[in-house]
Length: 416
Image (cartoon, rainbow, N blue to C red):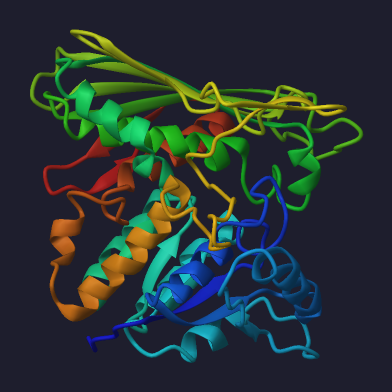
């Protein structure tokens, strides 16, 4: 693979997280990539959507909220599809074809499209950062693992919570607590998100894929360092309904409000040792709770426990007419420094993307081995377990049964 000192990047998905105002304020992917360009790690940026009619508004947003706010920030990009051309759901292909081998893409699109976009890039020697879940099915995830290994490209799943200082420190503490006993997580977003996600909520994906994916990965990541070699063996899912399908949201019939996954974990070293986990996700939380997303978990080992509330960090801002809000400046800090330069490089949302760009450069330069990355980063191979649990949960809901998970000695996973 050719050596590229500055990475060319295509951002697939002109969605709120990439470009415009949302719960992510100024966006994340776009803002971070423009700052990495300012810092000399990224060269050319392209952004890919489906409709060509949005580019004027997106450019205006970048000018008003990024270039006019932060010093030396160049938000120029190449759009796909081109302005004035018809809508094209496969515009990503032209964007990827325009990239030299060893470039990279990010994928922030509906869950069902991840596999096709990632595979198209991988087969052309392009590195991939894909949002969680990497795919909706275990079989598609495994196909990407094999394709990435064959092509010699780096594929990372955007599991940003691994870069949160509290979560990372908690992992280090958990490995000294003996075997695994219990894990419980809760993550939510307010009811207003049902309007934001109306086009795909309950159709293309569900709240478990969207939010449980975070803490399932955190738990599996913690267990990598815990004695006992624990593996998930069965999943039983339950869901509540009635809010999302009612006015004013009126999502399709069957759309769950809350989904809980009950997962049994078993030690591969000693089958008599088992642990249990409950992962719960909701997009019907109150709209006035002071946070956009409740995010918390409790990990219990044989010798102690780790409890983290990521949403409530004792940093509260109160404004007349708006009430009190708990701020998570650890994820993204949008305040410029004293000279007007963007200063959010230490947020774990930023670090996750920066680590991807830096790793792509190292792979291109031949200074790291892809197999070594599986042991320390959320690579496509390192995150198989999360997809297995998520699909098992969906199948448990649809088929009204407990779904088993097998992992062979060769490391090949399957649902039963």
